[in-house]
Length: 158
Length: 85
Image (cartoon, rainbow over the protein chains, first blue to last red):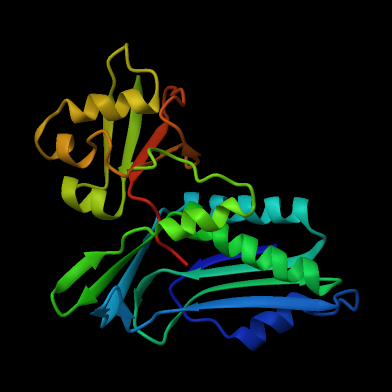
């Protein structure tokens, strides 16, 4: 398991090569890359700032990977999340899972992303033509957790 | 009991601070009670931490519920629902 929170960009090919290096038991790698879009909720986005909770962030990401390991047969897992200033087209997040067979890799990768969206302490602040605004959490992200039988937690649902 | 408060994102901005060390009254024993105690400060505290506001809480860097017990030296954080990924 590798967890990294960083300001710098990442190279998908290099990361995947590292993830499966020297392990002929790996038959499948599934990766997800999240990107900064230029429009959100109808507003043009010129830039964004990603804040996080140092210390808790890494623990939260590690805990979800541990839960994924308990559910599926995972050989190796990588989570990279960027923080600080970002612009449209930039990569924000990478989740990659290496397994023997594709089913485990597809499922675990989606599970980790769904969990991350609602449980890892990151917050986006967008720059729009009307000024900066904090991004609101989406109810659909909480709903996405339900398919894994994992309720959202931590405070009032309001 | 002495604890460390941490605030993030919009909560941090509205309160105008990212952390604060506080000495709690003896009858404050849970994270939810800390929230109510802070709301009683009034002004922006009453607004930002108001009951019913979408707020997440963490105890020692772990997401928690209002009934989570606190102990000496704990780190208690308040922040909006997360929006990473």
